[in-house]
Length: 234
Image (cartoon, rainbow, N blue to C red; front, top):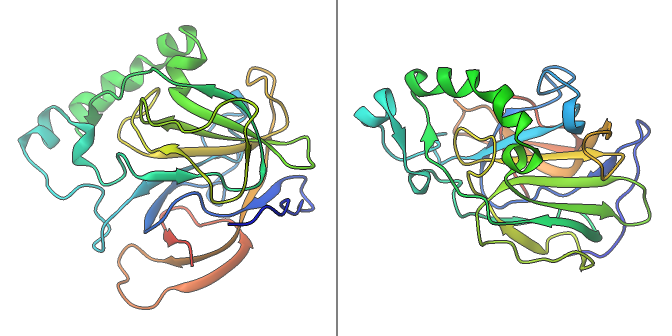
């Protein structure tokens, strides 16, 4: 772990380390489009979604009739309960816990009505969207990094705590606006998510491979994982 402050990059964002161990699918990345989530709302312009996978690129070990027709328990998925770490040195400025980890959805029969109910969830407030989360102010910077959809009861930090890159802050969950256990991470210029603008987030070094590739991976430094790629920290 390192206590050194992250370097600022020309675009005005930050560089940190990947906040997890093992192989994760880059489900959403700003390499595909900006804003990465289709909107600048809540500072998500350059946000990522990461999902833990096994050696075969699967997010869960099995599929069943529930996968096709119903919801599934979050514990079924590899990402659920995995440790998550601070990507850079800084100070914890916001922590929210207590939101439930709800059932996961892979079936279109459950995804479509869930998508249609999104405006209602937004009206209910940030906790309904973010779920359990931690926001860290980057050391020697006015920028913030948020880790979102964490597992209820897993948070290990409190506001005011100083963290180093690699310090555990919680575990991956399925709280908030999440269809299956995953990590949503973003950098932004304000703690007020109603006013925040997203800023670029890059990672210092990682391995990247295609989901269909089981051979050697390529090394990437100070850049952005590609959408659809599987990555891990060196």
